[in-house]
View (tube, rainbow, N blue to C red):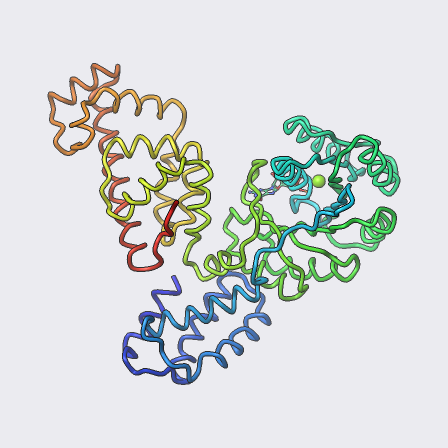
Length: 439
Ligand code: GDP
Ligand code: MG
């Protein structure tokens, strides 16, 4: 990652005491590369680098930080600031219903995000009403209705009626049925055009949404900037939702979009599933852009699914790199709850390569059942000393669990790999950022 490259550059600098123009220039070349690699708009990069340079040159090197760490800190602070500083929330109207309108190009993720948002809000005790405002393809209405059924949230539709009429009628319906948030899914186009903008402007004029949120696909990189700029000029956006940040997108689009429109990014779409919508954290996105991985989101995700005690235990184990078969089983069970292993791992710094290796090792139901059977057939001593399980023990364990010796061997091998990985994580988190304390 960028961190390593900067450490390299500043190796010679240790103890010099002050960041010189030369040092900073060199470092900024790396920063510039990292940002461009992350798909940040080049104009934004240029401005950003100039700004950071100005701030960094001549700064005393803090005693607690290496020069590289210090430059990274400045870069990170500035990136975080550029991304909006603190986390932005949606404005819920004190006088319900709050009207939220989702806009964006076709395929950006509007309909999916409407469902995700409805789910998130109902978890917070709200009573959303979903509104099918994309009238051009019958499949679009159906798609929203299916989501509504899955979530047990009502979907308002008038078929292929005028979208302005639909929006108005939906708000009336929300009023009369006590739904306190109206989420309007709208039509998109493959490209921006006048007709689309006029239609959206008309909906806006007739129901006066509290929040007009642009849904934009992070994978579209540079194009996202133009899209966001146009929608903002035509409609006046209240916020942005970046989708598909679970993919290969490195998050640079987030930075450019925020910088160009000045609109806060409020949520991040992290997958196709309905619970894959997260509040957008500028500081964590800054880390991701810098390629440091998103340890905090990982921990938070783990926390939401682990019970706190187990999480604290795992955290300790990761730090100490002591890890036995009982932990392994527990972890497999937890990881299954957390979602795809690769998604979880991709958030750990430096894990990209490992993630790829592990792609073929997804845990499925059946496999987990077999692992459980094998580990339950071991004595506690065996679980704590897997490396001491000899041939006759393996035979006994295989018999006890209704598996074959080669299955036991495979499990032990898999365990060994995981243990190695844990050690790697531990050494990385020791040298870089510490894993935060868990309650
Ligand atoms: P719309 O045309 O803007 O309404 O887009 P859809 O909601 O129909 O989404 C288009 C495609 O993108 C669908 O296959 C979604 O499952 C997918 N999608 C939406 N959001 C995300 C996301 O955050 N991550 C991933 N991986 N896929 C997403
Ligand atoms: Mg749609």
